[in-house]
Length: 143
Image (cartoon, rainbow, N blue to C red; front, top):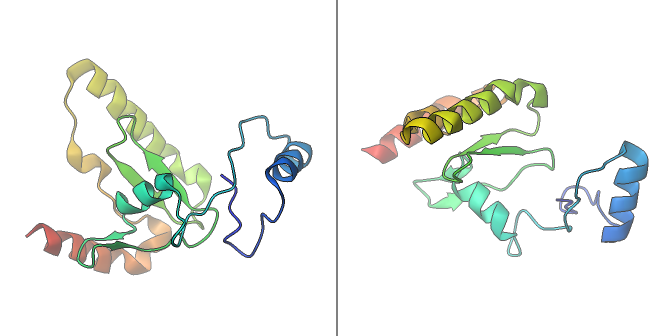
């Protein structure tokens, strides 16, 4: 979804954005409407993603804002698990997580059971500076 909340990168109309993506990058996939990911007009999808990922601060009951437009989220097939990936995270490094989600989906279809812990919203390598604090907060909130 295009968004103009990051350095005004998507100023064009929906038609201009689609034309640019198709001509410049050869985009053949559906390009959704421009939307807001932060602030009072946050799209419902991004409210969900921010609330059910590690962006949510359980103690304060608020979500951190999406920091940049290359933020990535991985959502399980049942929509119950959301994994946040920092914008600086190399997309190629997400493959093991995608494989894990897909394998879990296959297991769920076969056995109708799932290991809830395998999709814990833990920060990835690029968030290492905040990992200890976030993990401690998560553990404290469980007690």
